Length: 248
Image 1 (tube, rainbow, N blue to C red):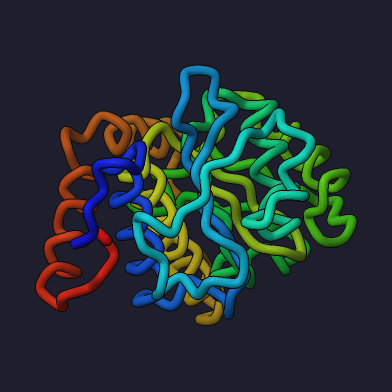
Image 2: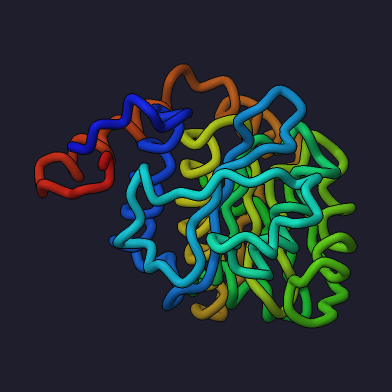
């Protein structure tokens, strides 16, 4: 493990690196695209993000880049992030301080959902109910998430109750308070989207949960003690068993 005494936010960096590497193991990544970020100051303007052009499976704690959403010179830095990462995550951390962590992917089932004419996710089981009334759908894709398009998108996340944006014709953006909470949501959203899509493929009528039960279940997920933290702890333990360099 590297000497990290001179690197700030080491615990947060190791959590992020574990999330990147596990996302790659689950095939949630796409080539060297997609990005995760985590705010590291009180206002949320300074954040960690993956370096440009680095595969998720090779991201380590020390390789993450720390940037400021309010610094107009960011893209002139020698370690400047991907321009769509700067556009989307810079816009998000400027506009939504409650979104401490953000994870954007083009994972298979979430992107299939985003490609449907109706991209809403109905509550048809316990996992889909996690997102009941907590998802917003962007129906106005306007191209890649450079700054203008990204600024438009993040306006849809102003309501702190919203945890997930289905980016129509694009992918998904998940937000949360911590890496553990956000990655857990990302994992479960992909599972929920897969369940829904496979249910549609049967051609049979779907069993929809009543709104009251779906909302009750969503609240139970939110209050479930330590679940997301346990999930991330076990991910790190599994990575440690494989001698992964994520914590370096």
